[in-house]
Image 1 (cartoon, one colour):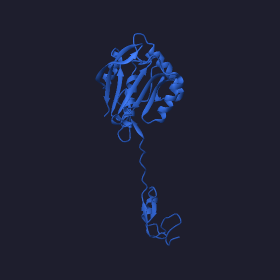
Image 2: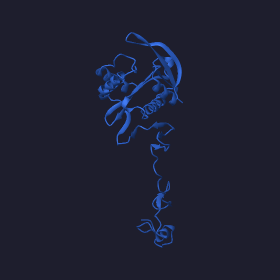
Image 3: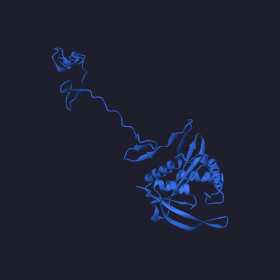
Length: 254
């Protein structure tokens, strides 16, 4: 033990600053040895300072119904889970291969709606083909499929696929469908917000989609979100031997 020092670190004569702080009830100071010092020589006292609160990974904004989360780096993430009156919880999540059967049922229900051809094919793919497609989409960074899960019931789908042409890698195709029972609730807009997030994360600067000219509710949704009409494609699809037109719409990702 150093000469003139007590075992508790105080001075035997009681005249040092550390003893004064003990008498006043102040918090003890940390002792750090200076470089090159030996024993108790060269020892200085440092005050303990409380550590700051850790910064959260993201912060919730408080701007009404369309709440977003701000990630580090300035990116934003749309609300992925929300509750409806009655306690039902609806969330947007990546599709799993186990969702294949439910997604096929959703597509068939949408395709059977009276007065409109919302699907561009006569029938949706088989469950096995859908399952293989979902597995491939999970492995491939240029494609993604999201579903709207209403307490275990799949009521919406969002499909995204990057253009494979070398000169159009910044463009991705978008497909969206929502069950008739869940429309006009903001689900379609939430899916479009999720599409924009995926586009920013994937360095996609343009989203494109095709919509039938008579599907006015869908066109109104896309235009309200910011999509613009870029073209009108005559006889773009064939269904039951009939040629069907399509409206080409696009959204610039900024």
